[in-house]
Length: 511
Image (cartoon, rainbow, N blue to C red; front, side):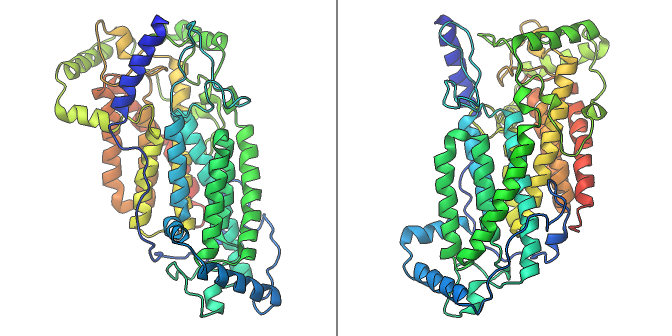
């Protein structure tokens, strides 16, 4: 019981420190005119499927048919009887629901980013997807889990919308208000064809992917999907058959994404103690050192030791991205770093503390990958991207960061390098004690990978995002939990891994 109290106080202090930065919130922006509608978007190269025409939907009824005219009548009746709360919901979902579903994902990541605590006897029970209610509840949305959830969400959205765009221009059905001038749409006229509904593709695929990742939130996510689908009618953007066709695509693409997720190796990432100990022993034999967790109470197994074995998106062999070894403990380079870290610890300035805090993204937050998703969201609105282009941003951003995280965790557990708090006598951190080895820095890899993708897609923001990535890397040094080479090598590692994703993006036909 004594250990539990120590852990509880440490947890609360860390939680309060981590949450000084705002958690994900509803981003209030007005509907905007899209910079482009990308008529050729259905010909872009998807990620999970071979082409936009791979998922079939039935041909729509002619707009002059009795069936379509009946749908128009139902649409007008619904719009004429809209309540104030329904009108508010339509405004919330806007014309770019990619942003809303990303916000929902970040909200859930923050909610479930809580370290499972010890039992009263000091033992630990890990979150179990077969028993999501726990205790402890499943999942523990740590950075590797979070970026994986974001990657599957955004890739399913992207591929689903490529399919939707293909069928839109194959069937060429205009929006309802084009066929009936008495319908006054609540969204700006962005000249998007209505069959199938791109919003319905997003709603269905997003709900199913996020339910797979956060099973305890099934009812909440079903409620958000139902609200979103209803708003597609109330906005005047779609009739019911448009929505039904979009749901068909959303079901198909989420089936494919969830099938990949079930076999990508993530279920084996969190190992039993015997496996974890063998990984540490191999590093000790290989290099003469091994990381030892400095937490009190000490968790028996590090965080996801086999995450480095999870299937990557754009890299065939994770070892191709593994950096060279860190400095030997006791070497001149190592001792020089000890002096640097001691100097920072003895001279904690207000600015360094601000940087360490701003990029902390610890427990109870949306994690470092979520931070970069939040940044991307604002660029999407600033540059007036349509839903297809928006999904592309998030897909490549999260693919690169997930691949970066896998590469980073491969290096962490291959080298098993101790953190400064383990090898520098009397050293203290201002940013907690992470439960995994030091080299390389996850913040640095995630941030550099994310920044490189955003620099590619938004070249006028390149200087800014790369500077932010450098600051994120420095924040871990200022916090005392990483060596400088963890950050510098990690930053280069993130850039190198992102180049694989950028090469894919350059050849997807969107430019």
